[in-house]
Length: 615
Image (cartoon, rainbow, N blue to C red; front, side, top):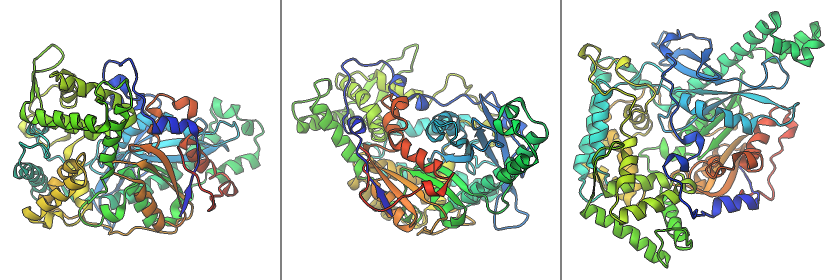
């Protein structure tokens, strides 16, 4: 393990100090970076129009992307298995594959589990290329490839445990109305029953209605799918190069190498783009749960690693071991940091004259909302509603993920709630549950559970439950009393996150589906090339220690510590709107160097020594 340290005063200012603006910006979306403002509208492209293929056969989709459906075995260990069609999206590099500057394709995964890699790529591919592409005309340029893991998004078949979209919306809305587990008026028994209701629905689909994908949605087969994408990209690269050389495009003719073309030049291009059957290597950028997939890939295929960057690293010894007994204690540290930052800033409207008094005011507000929820009247923009302590707790859970962006808005919300005004919170709550461009109606009973009755672009409960409950091993064996003890231990560990981590795993109590192929912890290998593991000093669910722990099991890995609060290193600067100014100064510079070094191995010289601390 090698730990890198670096001191950057600018980043210390950005990451370590939360500055409260003197003038508020109205609206939630204006407080968020462009890449996270909204989910792109992808309904204009019909994925079912693509015929699945064992090769990557792309067609244009969306704006500047290409899409394919890659056919892979549902069970990688059984010959003649049913098939899965993996939805794949590619943002092409700025150069053709025939160009000597073509660096390959970087696979990305956003985490979740069950977040859509298709939507993630649409949102961040251009930004990632800004980081990894060279500023030097002679440097490397990369494709970015996203994919929806098994059972997620546009990958088929799906595990649909609700008859249609309306049924799922009803379940989600009633779950939200029931309140968070931590609020005083919500019983553990009620929440446990709700978790088991979705588990039983999914088990019924798997056992009685041949939804066999349920046995193959855990993380291990996804790592095999990733290898298939890498391998088939090599096939596509060679085929594309041969096509371009036979029918050169205007762009190819403009390349200096083509102007000097000769048999030897063509041979050089073919040698460079040749499909290395069984030897293609992975370039990968995974975040949060995506780091589980990266570790599994490195564990299973250490000789197929080119560059792997894991940001917000999950400790797979914990995640794959038994219960998902996550290290969530730092969530409370981030909330405590809000109290301190607010108390020390005259621009923070919720502030009192000490940290203790600011903290006390916050907890008094929580208690008052427990006793006296706030009524909100209906307008043309939102429905009548009731704002409870659960709504505030849920928002606090989001805040600790991205404190730099959300602390100012939290200040505003707390002041409004303390003044008895729940309008902003109600708008925020309803925007996550309702959509203006969707007709909420029951599907024809004859089409129940069919894909046509669902919106594949929307996040769904079932894939997350299937992945978590299949990866973790023992929760389904716990008695109700043992599960309650587990929940109480999580709540003691973190006031902010304990209840949420319990709710994530509630379906696992009734999840009796066991995966066909499971890989137990510990993971680890001596990879053919280095891995870069990134962690923030204070992280609500994937603390720096997780990156350090995992690095010890992957000897050729590097740990990069950024002195920030929240999750995901790449967002620390994006969130304050300075991406362009510092994109190659901050950790993206390290990622750029990490990928660029793939061109000449001698360029990469991570050596133990005075290490670097990103501030």
